[in-house]
Length: 136
Image (cartoon, rainbow, N blue to C red):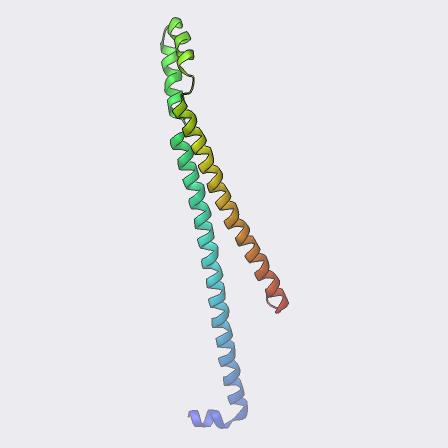
C-alpha cells in the first residue's frame, strides 16, 4: 500500500507537506513550552523574593510589640505612663536590626528588579525577532 502512495506524485507531495507541517507544529509547541517555563520560573523567583522580603520585614518589625505596649499603657496608672515614654527609646541593637532589615529589603527588591528587567528585555527581543521572521 505504501508503494502505491509513493508512486502517485500528488500523494507523495501531500505526505511530505504533512510531515513538514507536523515538524513545524512540534517545534512551535516546544518553543511555546520553553517560553512558558522561563516565564513561570521568573514569576516564581520574583514571588519568592517578595514573599521573603515580606517575611523579613514582619519578623524584624515590632508591630506586635507596639500593640502589646499600647494595651499595657491603657491599663497602667497615669504615673506609669510617663515612665513608659522614657523606656521606649530604641536601643543600639534595635537600630542595628532596623538597618539590617532595610539593607536586606533593598537587596531583595534590587534582585527582583534585575530579574524583571532581564525578563522584559528577553521578551522584547523575542517579540522583535518574531516580527522579523513573520511570526507573532
